[in-house]
Length: 454
Ligand code: AMP
Image 1 (cartoon, rainbow, N blue to C red):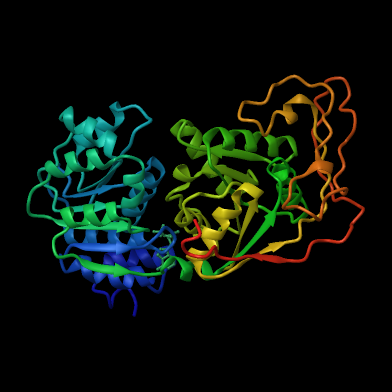
Image 2: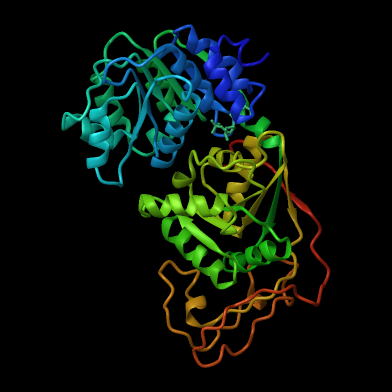
């Protein structure tokens, strides 16, 4: 089955072919005919499945040709990055048509977006907050919308967009086609779907454990305050590149990017407090290998179109197991294999058990390799505390390798601190493999926590 067989017109197929895609992905196989038929659709699909083309292509086809100034398809996304990427896809796939796509999102000035909307468009991709602002100013009207798409609906609810979605929905014509995409199905999602969709065709592809199968998943047990050293060691020793690292907080993302930088590993952080320009730059640097590591929070990373990522690191585990699946879904796309590595501190072991229960398979905990710790001054000492590192240098603090907490057995005594940091010098810290390699702990898998064991 190819894209023409699905009923797509030659000018759309030509654009897809130019991208190099010959075979539709499972979500595309199911979604394209469903959307073309005009039905409402509720699709369970996460990033990396090809879902964007799954709705963009048939939406382009349904609009046929340029008509008027007001958008006839409205695509809502939770994040600016996803909005930009979806719009880019729509512009590319629609390149052989005269349909026009515009995108609006918050965090940048409104003026250029208002001007673009004045010029008119057929497809409008938007984040909910900015769209409401612009509609209230009369920059566009939603009265001509025929197709309404909610992309990553679960994430939109997580981000508190439910009221904005309801307000936007109230501005749409009664008669329209609705498409809703969500990686997970909570009660809230079901509730929203029941209000928004009418007799939808349900599409479910790649349940989480299927996607995760292509990814080699491993874990290390490591005390919290050794994580950054172990990570630096793994990146350097393994010569890793394009490493996407997840932290739980924005501050944690900044701090880790800075710490890795001090180890000589070029890194950037990407999260909601960064300006749009900074986020775009970081993403471009990452895609083009100008930086080695991108440290991201869950929300900021959603929908990033980074293909076939070789390494995803859970520096901190998510407390919602589905988020783990989202995260590692960024690696091993399009048939390649990828690695997902989790650094698990003793307080995170229960999260790990919930994750393996969701996946339905164990994740091996590898023996922690010997790594050397060289901390430099109070800045490093402060690094794991929840405050920004202090800038001044000073005496080095010995690592606490002697007193490490439970989970890590293999590296005790093998980690070396650098000794005196020497009078406030700005020497870069480094990690090196430890020499004394005592008995390593045997590989021990994380096993699911029994149901009801909470
Ligand atoms: P998405 O899930 O929409 O974020 O898409 C994930 C990635 O798959 C994107 O980089 C797409 O460009 C790519 N992709 C989409 N459709 C196909 C296809 N039929 N074959 C190969 N790659 C695809």
